[in-house]
Length: 123
Image 1 (tube, rainbow, N blue to C red):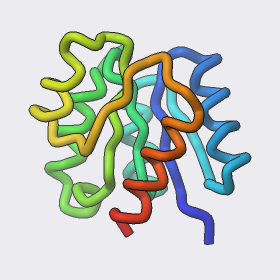
Image 2 (image 1 turned 120 degrees about the horizontal axis):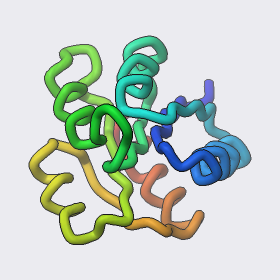
Image 3 (image 1 turned 45 degrees about the horizontal axis):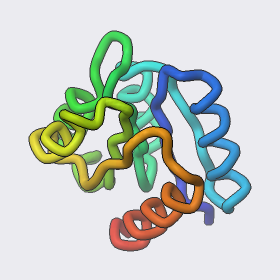
Image 4 (image 1 turned 45 degrees about the vertical axis):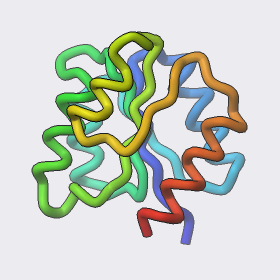
């Protein structure tokens, strides 16, 4: 059974590209364009991993992370925060309870390495 990955990013082209990269690598990938939609999808599909942009409309990624980490059925899901806002990324990751972070722009190899590391340790 394919591992499920939720990608939440309001940058449509990056979201589409990331989903495609993950699917080509053998994952079942689905996405959302804002924090609230991402939260809903996480609750509906219970992914094995979440890749979450920090700067999102409506609800920032670190707030989504805090909400997920309070939910008993979702708190074990590894979360990778992504952002071009590098000055605050490490602190946001630590404070929200996310597992790690990746600075935008990132290389496919970098993303897949991180995904593999966290998906295998999370299940």
